[in-house]
Length: 194
Length: 292
Image (tube, rainbow over all chains, first blue to last red):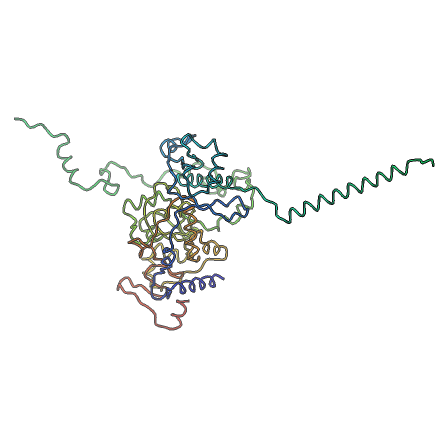
């Protein structure tokens, strides 16, 4: 099975225009084609937790964010005293044109606690001992905030509306039927003198 | 006019002109250390007085006089099963790697291999103790700042991110124990006069690891690796540098073939150290075998 995979890789590399003859020592230039693609200066939408169908991917451009590092709090001896591991990310909400207008408004309304007087959204993380991990955590938090802000109220489809109407109809009919039965019972107990 | 005496005197001159003091240059003054000699003579030949000690009848190692010994009192459990047969990977932190590069023990302008690391005495690998290579650990990811092309056997995600953030290339490759023994000690192998064997492919349980682009496996799809590079850059919040524009791109793109152990040498060749020659076979069957 492993040999099949090796062969597949050989074929892939052949199709990529590189001849892989192990006898002659050829360098595997497999990265040529790939690196020529443009590198995106953006962060992907955090679709980890939300599995709802959200096709609009909001990319968080890292160069539009202001990142600063400072010393973390808590126990840790010399390491926590000396090393700046707390990551703080901030960006001005109103001028963030990489976000849609309504999402910006929503963020502003929902996260009043995280927004300072200058209008910047501030996210910090001192989750781990590493700057990079804390930065990654900050980005995840920002993605979560954006996801929460771009939630659209669920509109019922035509099927849902029809189903609801049918159910109401059925319920009403059932109620009337029960009422008629009850009425019949009561009538049967009545004594009529004619 | 009396010239003031220079403090330190001639000893200071000597010290300034001699090479740097290292552990290799130091030696105690003869007669300062007294060697401890072996036992010689004695009424009871150094065995003590009567009993099992003198009579050479002491019980086995681990015996505690009848009390249930430690190694039997502790219960067995499933999570320890086969612990001595599990593959082990010697950790190499990014901090140590940066230290080696800074001291010039490892050359960042050439692809970094396990051979290079062992030559630089950066790690010690014992293939006979179920070591399957070296793993890259992300301790020191914050201070790592070198652009390198490195090949290890395992790597954590943070380590991969740190290396790619600095514009480097990382690959994970598998070496079976025989190939590993040859890789870490190439010269004794060449002196044996055997042809370089072809590197075996990983076993069933390791194939998923090495075919995964997330781990930068050497069997993974190159396009998927590029996608994984971008995804990791997005996750960790850095801009992925474009390697193809780099001047060292040729070096960074160097990767070993699946069956190759050494850069520049193919399986089937015999390296003759005394004659300083490489012998290549011309037999058809052998050529077919070594190129499969």
